[in-house]
Image (cartoon, rainbow, N blue to C red):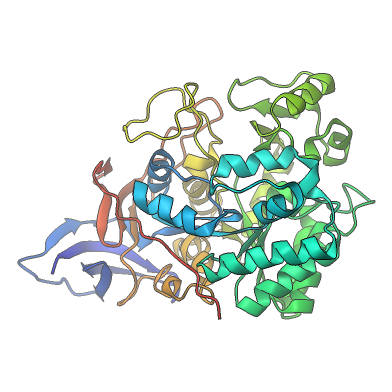
Length: 492
């Protein structure tokens, strides 16, 4: 039996909302004891964490990082569990098997992919459990259309099978098929409700951006949650709401007040990332989003698109190519205030929408550390959680440390309690909890990644344990640590 004692840190339990100077005793992957009296154990490994903040590792509900390199960046951001729930992967069995075979630094899991299921039925495209093959769908109009009754039944059956195989819910990229019949969304929500599984939705157009939309994206979630009883999660409310975030948060607040199970996530950046072929980046759609062609930067080349003609050309050449979209101006205080408002919304969950790393030589991963030069990604991959802590705790004082861990650890874990009972031991720091722990320097934690240097790790994480195993110790990465374990769903 191995024992580690984290000695004398500021221990945060977001479940209880407490901060206590205490020892945290870890045995065989679990928190065995939290003691305000120093614990004496001659055989234990004792790590002095005096003055540091100790809390449950961050649970990222929205990460498209499926690589060792990306997970290591997220580890330095305080993440211990990284889950791809907005897009998901299909087939789910292959997704889990591939991750297990490669090894994982962090705990991992996937939702059932609504887009891949529709793509298989409506476009005849066989999914491969790879994120890049899923993003290639986004510029294909065939799968975006409304289904016939037989087609709807066929892809719902595929999703039901994925849930039975351990998917953590259903990921719905509705924003990429925004003209499809809203009745289909209700059917997916009902399927999820029947299975006791949540949905994770990138919503369709807001009515402010497109008065002709079949239904306002945020209201669609509220209506479906009310009518079906499903637990429905609104992904990245900042990027889909943009300058309409006041109204959207009000809509969600009304739904929650009425008893609907609606949760919401946000990341602290004014720029998003997607595929250049996305519906909402069509040249004729830019005005509705308050964008111009120059708001879009291609990730691999760094090209800022000059005009709509060049945009149309790039969408035709490679619709799956990744780009960065500036939907708010972070140089403007009014826009920065909108980001803070979304983060401050009661019970808003921090989630990264972390993107894959892309190297010029097209390698898919690297076990080298530091990372080989030239990798491109959105800076949120490396910096979301540290940036949120810097802004909301240190600079603006809008969160206490207990509240920060509630937003980054406790609340995201609770989204999955029903579908994945194993999650009930995550996101809290008490005896019996999983020893997924982050120890950080409260005065030093900050993001370092930028658009021009997007893979620069965050600072301030002194130690990170996954299942009781050190991934980071004294600020140094253990290159041999692959303790991540699968988180799987169990439908009722």
